[in-house]
Length: 383
Image 1 (tube, helix red, strand yellow):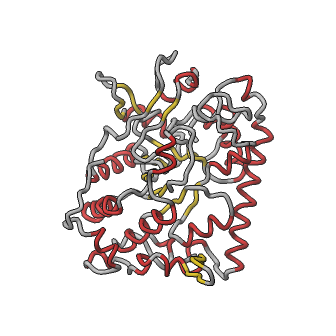
Image 2 (cartoon, rainbow, N blue to C red):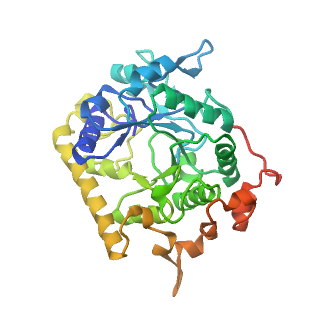
Image 3 (cartoon, one colour):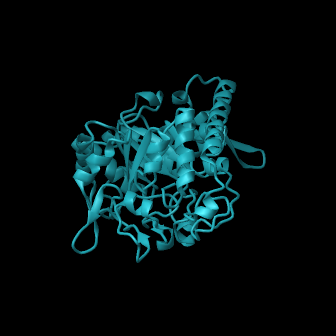
């Protein structure tokens, strides 16, 4: 949901709606623009591999992190999210055609203008290459931001790689404040179809594994999630109160939504996101097309959608006898697996049966123990 992928009026409507509704707005990797600031919402600054808004060009043309520029812009953010990967395009950088790069986009991303080539983010970070240096980078950003929460975002790939990351959290005592798990079902107009359709782990499996591994490492509480040391955020086709409730049952503390908020702006799924010809004005930089999107009216719809969706989730919690999101557990949700056969999420995903800190003792469900064992012959690639 970056500025660049979205029009200036769409970003303004979303940020204004978030402020009106009392919830945060994630910038996407396209940096903090003046339209984010104008909207006035609490911003989660998503920092990708190109370090838009906090990076510059090295002599060889690569993008590198610039701490001074980071300090300048982090004043406008409430939290910082380092994007390792995205559900719609794991291991692939963002793609913005040069035709969509306006002076305002170039200013926000610290890019030259006029653009002579497409803006394609690298597939990996230059500021770190392994989990230990990532933890150092998290600590560095926390210090530069004077203590603001710093987290990471990823789409689950091999569970062993996530387990190796959590090993580092335990060994160093340095961990992110939150982790966003993005499901492979997440959408984008900025990725090759083969990646968005076929790569990555769906949210149900990825989120439940992340929660279970963190529980086994002693970093999350399986009974009262609000007592966890690392918060979990879920994203990937969150469109209803029940999808929020299900994600809470799978281990999430917070839910992010993108596509569903585009519907509140008037998205008709014309599938023109990457062509700069979106007829609703949401994903185009063509002023003739975006002019029809009125932020003053759309912000109300954004706030209304959030309020009614959260209300629906609260009603479901009440109907199931749960007083708080933090107490929604895997046994609260059932799934039909065949004719006359239903199972709870706890029964479907055996890894939910791990005890807090159990992996540290080398015990727990077989699948998790295998993931946790870094000497089992499974190769862990650098980031």
